[in-house]
Image 1 (cartoon, one colour):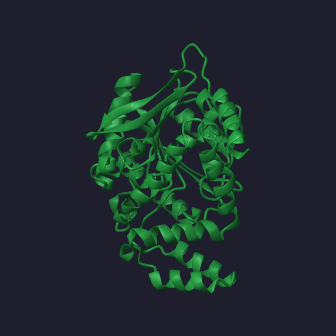
Image 2 (image 1 turned 45 degrees about the vertical axis):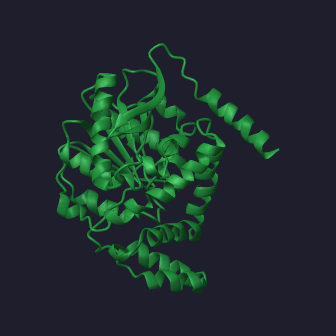
Length: 347
């Protein structure tokens, strides 16, 4: 019965995702990037719309599963979802032995290669860079270094890694565990210490999972948004879903490589429009460090906005709010057009 229901939901989602407009695009294939085959999906109702390149988080958590939830975005943008090495269908095709070099520098180089591929394939000079969660680590570097390739930067679930100085999310987790009387978990997280540079990939993953499962809104989002999107994805077989989860475990090795980054030292001057849209109740990547970084940024245009009633995965829990922000704040800057009628939110 469960598999029958899944089959019906997947069929309905596939129907919802059909693109029939004359100038639309719906293509997905493996492209040779960085010496390995990597999965790239390109979808949109009008090729004249701005092109969004998503840089997904995790590490290893492809955004392709969220396509049914973000179907409305494709009326206004061409959405490119790339399963980076170690993630999703790229991991499913090559397995652990076929992922090549698993470093943040290699992911950065891959992202540039994907960008150039899209410029050639879609005939555009620039793409709109939208990064979420762990993908924002790479996203910020791309935005700093290559304003000639990107029309704007949009970060959501934005990580701000301040050279290990900000321990607010660690301290907040300890306080939450103490208040809930979870002595075993409190002892385990305490033993890890606040210095993330000393954490192993397994400890980094344990911290993230503990944050997710001890915050009611984040945990609800995991169950109702992330897990449901995985289970009912029309693009993924059961074998693909197993590979998806294995890819996330495989990609954990990327996380510790980010812990010594200092975003302030790397630079707060951006030569392109800069936007941060953060969940107002995000405990994994809290809004305050993102707000402070935004305030320090110089850019041709910039904005910081809270997504209401959202924890982590804010753009996917509230895709309508996120689209509203893209249409009222980002698209006018990117295209030079007047903002649409949809009202924005502010924080």
